[in-house]
Length: 79
Image (cartoon, rainbow, N blue to C red):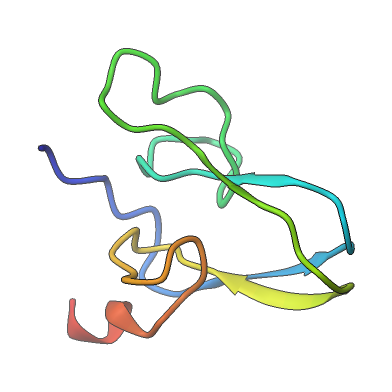
């Protein structure tokens, strides 16, 4: 399996709405980070759906190395 491209070495803070589905870019190639733009086509990567249980600010992983996708777990600190 190939490695995703690091989009940025910090998380993306996003205000999300309860019940709305967001598609997190897992490949790092999207020009609409942290969300999927379809740039993964032709790769083994697929976007990851995320539907929050409440309206709030969440931190989507930008380095694509999180162990808790799609949210940041601090993995970028070891890059």
